[in-house]
Image 1 (cartoon, rainbow, N blue to C red):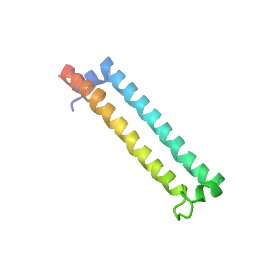
Image 2: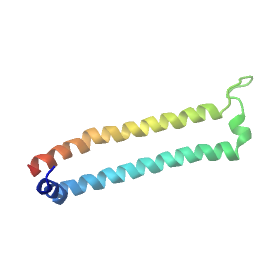
Image 3: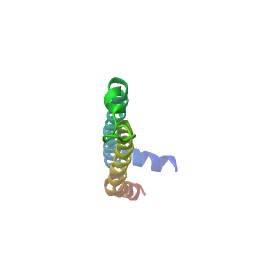
Image 4: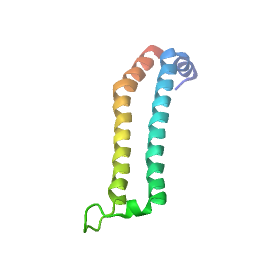
Length: 102
């Protein structure tokens, strides 16, 4: 990319808005994942009896296992939220920015 095109893109208010929205979304989703992950770790550390209890009477699977699977599922869902937003909001805006810069 040549310097003139780069400067045009960086000066575009749409580009500034794109960066702001994308950064904000990434921070919110990262914060949500950190809360979920460390919540799970704290639950395992501070509530070992409850997390080690069987899911059902006589079972061998502890509550910690489905809780851990839940952490993974939430991570996948948060990734899906980002991909959905990127496809719906960010990609069209990127196309506009590139077209305006040419």
